[in-house]
Image (cartoon, rainbow, N blue to C red; front, side, top):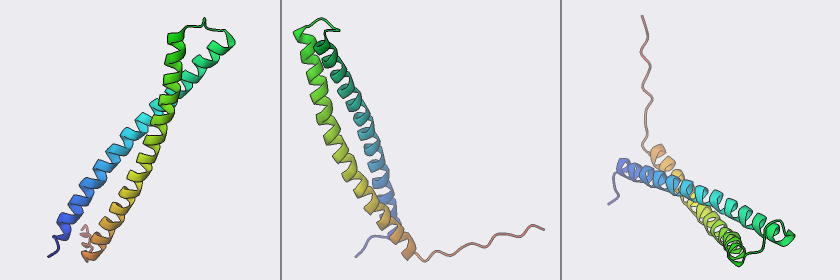
Length: 112
């Protein structure tokens, strides 16, 4: 026996909202990753050009920021794409369920 379409729609809306929040978190991490990549690259370039005095700890931090940023960027980008695809499917199913409800338009009251 199928669930009530109203319940299914409510569940889908909750799922869509949760996915939207998770996608937004991924976007924030993606932005932080891009910043880490840029900062790491700038510091490495500054070390290479002699603008900043060589320090192994600074170099290691820059490499970690650069590589870590690339890893975070890649994983969160693919995760966000997967969640967006799931959200699109849930929205399509929600629309299909709403269309099946055979809703009728309520006529507007006339002023007078």
